[in-house]
Length: 104
Image (cartoon, rainbow, N blue to C red):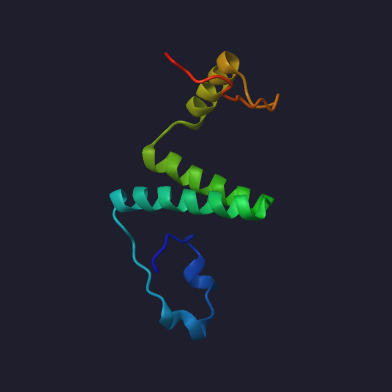
């Protein structure tokens, strides 16, 4: 099984087990694909554990995606605020249910 790991993982693996793994740098395209895969993995882990460590892992992957895509963090926050102002956030905990079949 191959998966994207944090930069210091090769240094953390016990010396007697290093022969079980090989690490290589991937291309930018593959890195983007692997980051998206990692994001899904971390979200699943958060859904299972619901703890701050897993949420921090999600943030780490998002930060890496921001750098890879050369997005501006301030611009992301501005877009978030604009959308929140226009459509709101999730503070009211609203659930939309379909009551009648839609014919339109």
